[in-house]
Picture 1 (tube, rainbow, N blue to C red):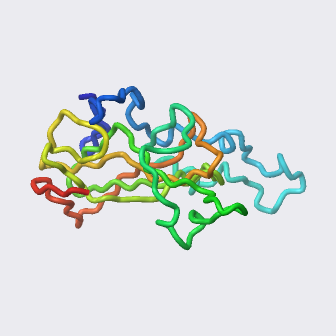
Picture 2 (cartoon, rainbow, N blue to C red; picture 1 turned 60 degrees about the horizontal axis):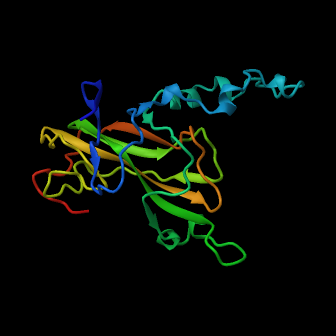
Picture 3 (cartoon, rainbow, N blue to C red; picture 1 turned 60 degrees about the vertical axis):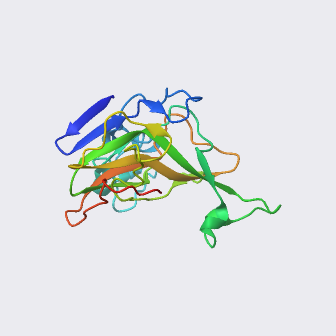
Length: 224
């Protein structure tokens, strides 16, 4: 098994094979990387002084380039960049499962505007007790064509009779009951006719310290 130890409480583990032998496991060879290694082009190209773009200025003549809040976002969490353009996932949900939101809207022809997909990645987080894993949209991308929904599942969720967390991947290392495990998965909305371009960051993986959280007992199968 390929492992990448980030620190004393987080290790990334890569799946060794797919549960379905008809599909090759050849994507996302590199472990999740620090979000700070990536900034979108608009931010990288942005000048610090707004008078570069508006000579008369606006009073506070600094742009978002020097905003501590936006810069601070990139100091938290990890991500996986898309190796190629993505227009779907491994499983499709129906837009009416989000009835009443913009994700279930239709066009003038009565067709749904958005596709809702589960996207799975061949990595999982092995974390010390007391941590959870929050997955959310990357807030500096500002895309109108895709959106990643936030999620924070229970640790060791969906453990089956083989000691796997479920999903489409297989890990050789058995689950250690002294740790909590989280698959890297996202649910993403992609507008029909568009895709997430290769090399783009579309989600953030953020460890959350939650000492009152006990997780799910991995001794008990929880079929999700």
